[in-house]
Image (cartoon, rainbow, N blue to C red; front, side, top):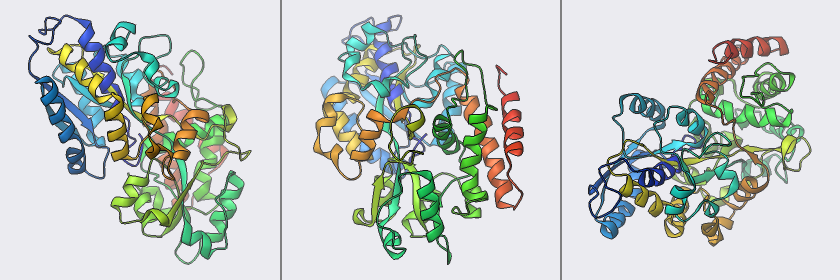
Length: 438
């Protein structure tokens, strides 16, 4: 979720939910804006370097919405460490916001609670139509074949960021395109207290994002076609072992990274301690950490063939934030209007520029800001070589169970314990036993 901003995934769902709510009826709004309550509550995910940064970005836009509609939006920016639990509590208690951001990987899990407004064709029409949105972003809004539970707000993708000076000092002239090249590059740099690649072994969401992509490259999806967990397939085991082996066998990741949580690998990168990091939409965070734009470069994340694409050439999950609306909102009309506002072309350009993300709204992508060094690779990745995480109701449990298995394997590697195919499979079997549909 991910992203440097914690995966970054919640705003899209909020938009979708809001729009759906407005059309759903059954609220005190009476179906018209004139008699709707003049206030909304909005839980935004922490997308910037801090909660205060998000408030500075969002509050002027919320004031603009109030001026246009007369509807005041009460903003709470919720840290990623709290967001999912806060949402799950709200779905069971019924005491939640009108509109909220969710990580797009949570869409199917939250859809299964029945608390979010479905986005059918009529509700989409309220915000300008489904065809305004990029297909890859819509692929992470809920279970296929069902009306989405949210709408896309911010889109992100993983890329390989590299330190230009560290590459030059090692005589490296171009970023690696394959995993073999990445390991070779990392070994040339990993000496004298410097390391080739940064990782975050204690960051469960990031662990999932990385091994999901490697799983695609090994022909595995971690779930069967009917949504059953399949964590111990040869491809899934190979994917997890390949990722952990960057520390355990290849020695291009520092052992201390086994304990790293959110953004700690980015801090090392910005300080020149590591030469590369695989992350989603990182440019804005680098800037807040004091790194100048000309000090880093960005390239597509590696694939075995060196040429990103579909299936085994997948090199990113479809990262992003969705906007959703709680069905029990007493201001569905206002919520829908707010989702329409936040997903308008103008707001999409403004907000995604502020966060360094890519608009999931097609028309907004024409802005030159989304064809810069920081964004061009991400936009191309989303269009051609990114895949949505499994849209199954148990996805959040998958992130916890398999993410923890990877964390434990990194701990083994850091402690000098051998990481074998058998030990990886054992950890993944344990994770599968923790799943509801095991």
